[in-house]
Amino acid sequence: MQCHRVNEVLELLSPYWLKNKELSLLEVLTLISKEAGFEKPVAELTDEVIIYQLKMDQEEKGAMIPGIAKDCENDFQAALLKARGLTE
View 1 (spheres, rainbow, N blue to C red):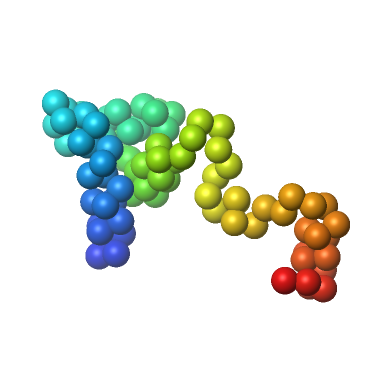
View 2: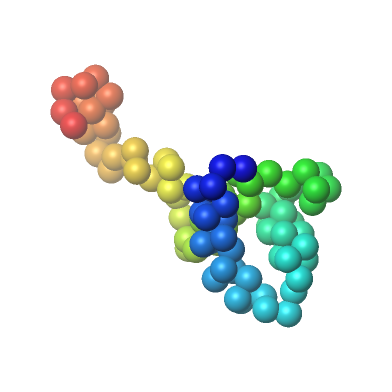
């Protein structure tokens, strides 16, 4: 795992772990994997799953995925013009 990803995981993990102070790190990772619907053993849990789940934990239930939300347009016509490169 690259250094910036380690920093990102630690930054996202801190507030999550503080909500579950009584748990060990392995228990926290197990909880994250369950919340993400990850069905493989915890040893196979990837950093992408951890980061995604921790980011979504900070969002409201039913919120749009952050990576998709940045590209979302409320107006179909504006989205169409943007897709054709006519507007930015």
